[in-house]
Length: 180
Image (cartoon, rainbow, N blue to C red; front, side, top):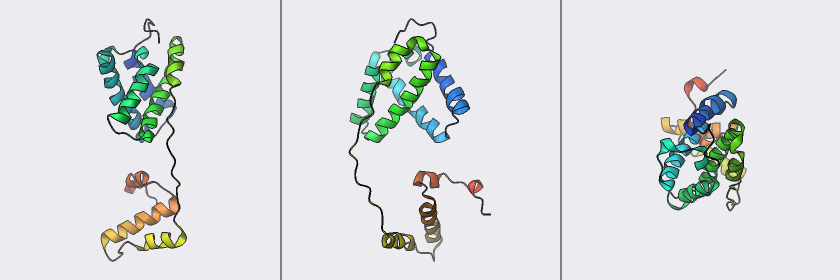
């Protein structure tokens, strides 16, 4: 990417991406925004070390395909992240690059190369479903004579009846419930 561009203020572009685009326009969930933030909290220091440059001096040109590929390798090899986590980090970087392409069209050739970094395929294991007998046994397993057993029973029933993920159930607050 061309670093001679007069509009090459990466910090300003990132701020607009998070505040105006993700929150204001896309209205993404808080969890998605935090995951994107965490990606940049790892990515920017990594790139700065990689190219021996201060984070404050990084430019859009430094978000090159080769630096992204190196970062993804670092996530898997040094941090021990799974392919799914690696791909989630790449998705956050791609979202920013797509935004940057509209804001700084002069940088499109380099952005296009960076956007071409592929997701990594992972081996898919066969997801087996529980049969009715197994579901009944699971739902009957908490000891409903204790407080924690009643709690566990409600959580299992809620997950079963709604299809909610564990992460979604964990984040339910009292104010989120409407018992009418």
